[in-house]
Length: 90
Image (cartoon, rainbow, N blue to C red; front, side, top):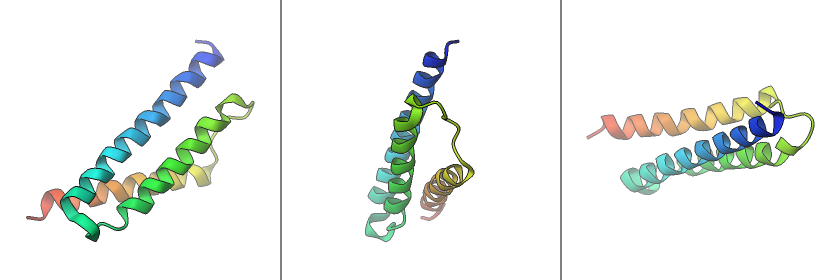
């Protein structure tokens, strides 16, 4: 696999992650309404980090820093917790 192929696959993976986060965020907003106010900032963090990572894929250093990975993990976990709570609550 060439470096360009790896970059393209990584770019597509980030886009799939944002797409999945968008779908989960919209479902949370639809099911919980305005009460799920934390879903929006979590989605925005995910979107911002992914956009930044996609932008730097063309540069020499493409390894994400620990802080960025922590932000993505926090955003995804927040969306997952909201989705779980909405699925469990009547």
